[in-house]
Image (tube, rainbow, N blue to C red; front, side, top):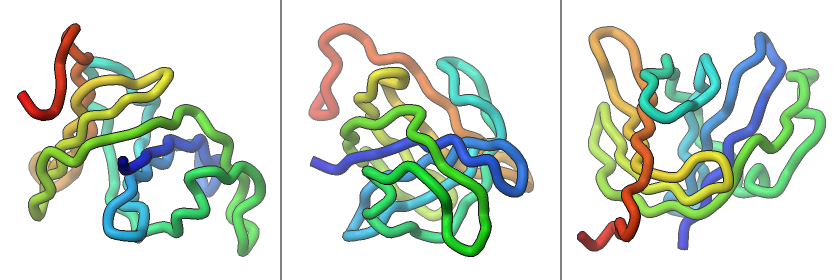
Amino acid sequence: MPRFVILTHDWPHPHWDFLAEAGGVLRAWRLLAEPVVGADVPAEPNVPHRLFYLDYEGPVSGGRGRVTRWDAGTCDWLADDPGRADLHLRGAKVAGRATIGRVGAGWVFHLRASRPGWSPEG
């Protein structure tokens, strides 16, 4: 089952890195505010990251600050289209359906809480 991690990252300004496993890499987005249920969090797509970051905390190469695990867990990819991704996340702090998509000229991360008994199959 694919995994995800959300890292706090202090460079070049404090933000959260949302990384989700897909095809041997981590799809990556920078979240410009803490991900909370029901909020539209401004986001920026980032370059794919190595799977190494699923379990890593510490300094980032090239003097690019430090990362610390904020949450982690498993995920199911529900949709992956240009300009939009939908995932079901199962973590300690975030659990539910996450949508990352273009809104106007920018991107937004939105998390909806899981319903009791919800599963990605239906």
